[in-house]
Image 1: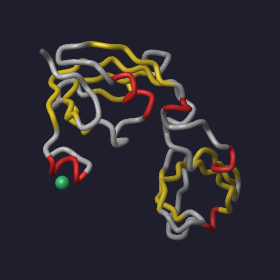
Image 2 (image 1 turned 60 degrees about the vertical axis):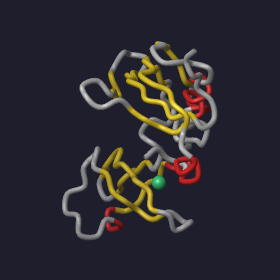
Image 3 (image 1 turned 90 degrees about the vertical axis):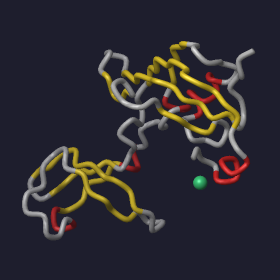
Length: 156
Ligand code: ZN
C-alpha cells in the first residue's frame, strides 16, 4: 500500500510550471526534486489541495487561478514616484528591481514598469500575480514527517 499525501507528509516531486501560452516559468527538470512538508502552507493553496490523496508515481496536471495562486494584480501596488526617490541610482530603466520598505515597515521587491521624464512607475505586485498557473507534477516519493520536522514546519 502506498502512503497517500495528507497533513504531515513529506513529498518529493518533479514539476513544471507554465503560463497559458506554454512559456516555462519554473521547473525542477535537471535538478533535485522539490521536497516539502504538506499541510502547512509551504505550497500555494491551489496546488497543495490537489495533491491530497496522491501517491508515489502519480502524475497530475493542475491549473491554479490567481485567487489560489499568487493573487490578483492590485492596482494600489502600482505607483508613480519621482526619480529622486531612487537615491544613488543614475539610470532607472524598465525591468530594474529594487528592495523597498512598505508602509508597514516590511521589505518588498518592486519592479520598474515605465520611466517618463522625471516620473517612474513601479509595481510591488508578486511577479506571478494575475497569472494562471499550469503545473505538471510527478510524485517521486511520499513519507511521514518526523516529529522534529512537524515542529519546525519544514523538511530536514
Ligand atoms: Zn528545522
